[in-house]
Image 1 (cartoon, rainbow, N blue to C red):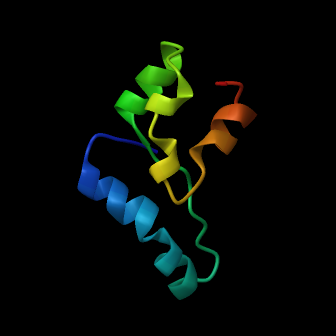
Image 2 (image 1 turned 45 degrees about the horizontal axis):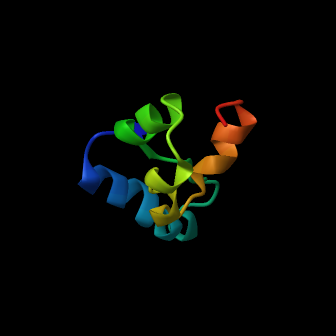
Length: 68
């Protein structure tokens, strides 16, 4: 999911672990800021992506889809 809102990111990425505990079958998906994906597309150094701040590892999906 691609987002432009910090509060949306917090709710979907950070609070998703709580939702997994509350709702059987709920599975978190990676979330990205659109600027992070622009940085990936431009081939910038991975240290600027900010992926280390995510709860759900966004790199797994990017690698699976051939983005990195």
